Length: 167
Image 1 (cartoon, rainbow, N blue to C red):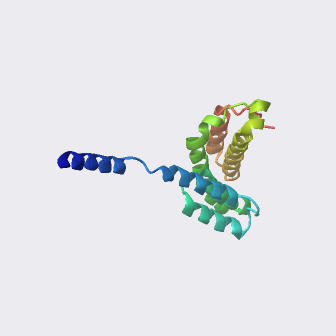
Image 2 (cartoon, rainbow, N blue to C red):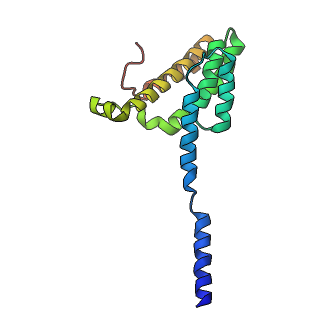
Image 3 (cartoon, rainbow, N blue to C red):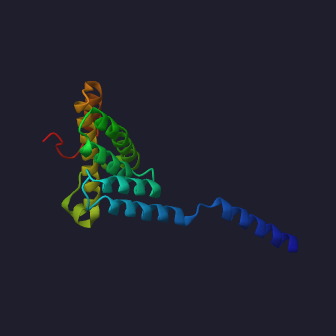
């Protein structure tokens, strides 16, 4: 009987280590909400943008908003070729992380009922993608890289945005 209880205790303790910790997803969501709050209320040209990008990287380096802040900081501040070149890497990372996490919402169209029930958050994410892809294409255009510009625009076009991004 004692051996049976020890065996059961051993099995449960082993399973407890194998189960994912429920707080991981919750803490990740909280970190991303904090990062989302960091992106508002400053000028992307300022040093505050760079500080916030670094703070966001410390919280979650796999979230697109982290690189959105950094990339737009370099993009807005760029005055010459080297500044634009610096902006390309974080903007490209932001686009890639966005597509990885939220690629499914890019082509979605929403009804007015869905928007009233909370789909407006997804529409804001679609606008984020449009802004990121547009800034990346403009960087390539300013850097006089027509092949990269064309590739960025064709990727944007292939995503079937629900609204006209060319206007």
